[in-house]
Image (cartoon, rainbow, N blue to C red; front, side, top):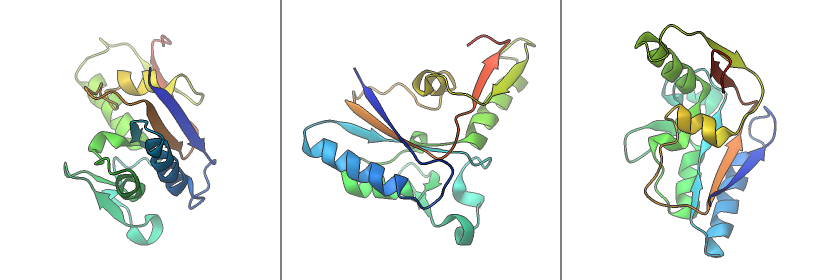
Length: 158
């Protein structure tokens, strides 16, 4: 069974959540665990590619061409596990995904609501298609959280 480790630090930037996560991932690997690191950000941007590098910092480009948070570069260098587009989730990407599904009629005219409390992040992200089911089993997934988790429901059903 995969274990999830959530690294929190509130909404404070440059606190060291990313480097701490990368270091923890490397330590777990040294103990023989398969590790995957993911970054969850509160930005309304779909990805950091359009953000000012002076305000946000540099963008890291993954092998699959995704423009992601610089922390993914740290994760890749510390653990040797190549970062992918699915490893960087932003609020904007979640909203974009939800709105696209609504426009396609996936929810058959039911309303969608946004709640500012946490349900199991793994289940929510998998439902939204943001953390695809991998054919590779990981013992540990490390998820640094930059802010509160926003959860969507369809007709108040979770």
